[in-house]
Structure formats: C-alpha cells, structure tokens
Length: 68
Image (cartoon, rainbow, N blue to C red; front, side, top):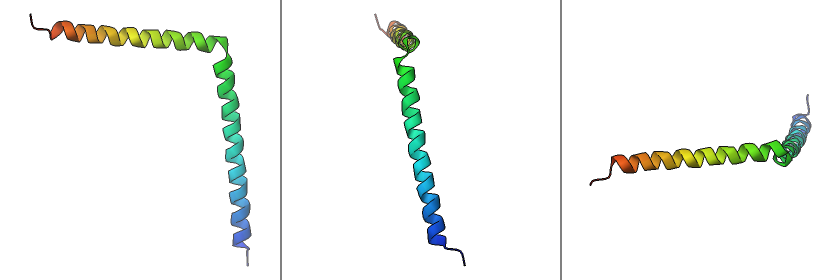
C-alpha cells in the first residue's frame, strides 16, 4: 500500500520550495527593472501624462458644468 502521508509531504515540501524560489526570482527581476535607468524615465513620463490627462478632463468638465 502506498505511503500517502509521505507522498503528500514530499509533494507539499517541493511545491513550497518552488514557490519560494519563484518569489525570490521575481523580486530579483523587479529590482533589476527598478534599478534600470530606462525605467525611471518611463515612469516619469507615464505619471506626467496621467496627471496632464486628468487635469484636462477635470478642466473640461468644469468648463462644461459651470453656470454663469
């Protein structure tokens, strides 16, 4: 008869170990991405565009809905 507890424990431990390894690799690659010079520029441009876009939308809404 198979030793199900041993099989389960082996599988569980290996899956847990693999998940931890994947988390570490993900963290390393995220750090690499964050540290790259190109990333900072892209983030700044994206933030500026989003702020500008939101400002324009709010201004347009204000102009359309302002009673004079």
